[in-house]
Amino acid sequence: MQYMLLIYTDDTTEPAPGTAEFGTYMQRYMEFTQEVKDKGLFVAGDALEKVNTATTVRVRKNEVDTTDGPFAETKEVLGGYYLLDCKDLDQAIEYAAKIPAAELGSIEIRPVMVFD
Image (cartoon, rainbow, N blue to C red; front, side, top):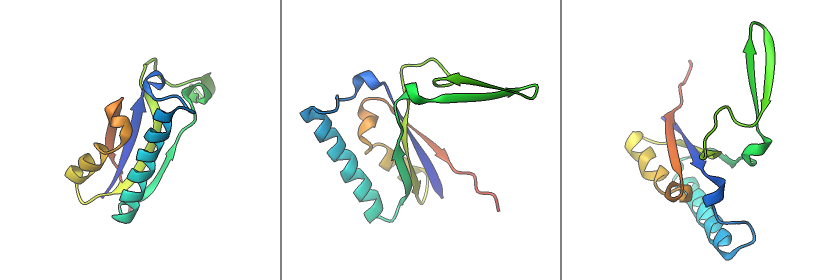
């Protein structure tokens, strides 16, 4: 079954690019990505641009309304995702706990609905 692992963090808690801590943080991401690829679990995954680049779209009464930024005011924002093909939720939890941002924010796990 496929599980979407959504990575939520507060940008102010992550190491700043260009620092030694950032290099270590990104290395951990590369190692995690290689692990899930080696185990045959990786389907897709990417980091997202900063939240200030987001646009939210709503349609109300056939009118399209766009808003700069995320849909909700919160400190933790969606920063990236992994789509893994795991045998069950327990395995998805095991790998979600290995994502470096789990130590700074949270990882939301959602089963992917398959339409046949």
